[in-house]
Length: 181
Image (cartoon, rainbow, N blue to C red; front, side, top):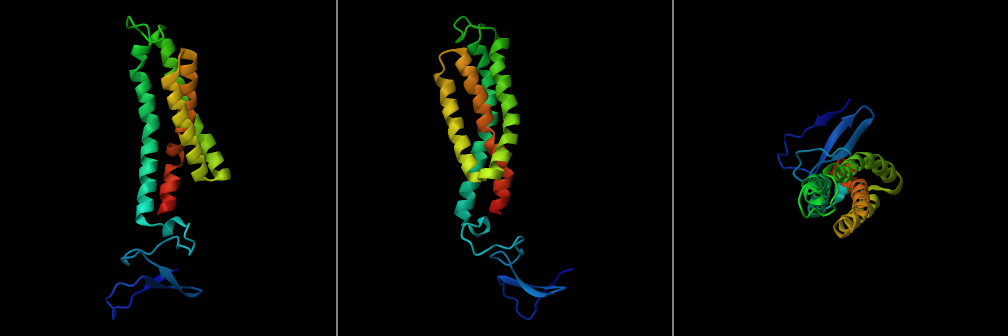
């Protein structure tokens, strides 16, 4: 059991709090304002996410938020464009039935789910940052491939691969945000 020892004689906010444990006392770091005891305790390593500057933490949050938004946006845009790509309009891009065009949407959605399993496995082996970087890089490439596709088979392959690689931020975002404290 632990108990917090508060010194009422000194009303100033301190950056260290004293906790008494069964095995003796130990100093615990608290947040800069002194209201919150940090658990886990930050190390002296500058690469420890708990020691990052607020700007670095906010940049990481922005990157993760944007990249986590893109897979769902990209998948939903595939549904919107299926009418233009099918033969429902006189000048349809692929001139094939809309049900066939929807195969690219279904493949993309399936890979958004299945790709997360591989992301977690690769992240635990190679680390979160390298996997995030390379997967987002390939996702951007497959998105460009979707735009440059000259036939439906190429487009569908690009959409399926885009679903696999763009799921990275959805899979590791909570781990990265939790690590950044």
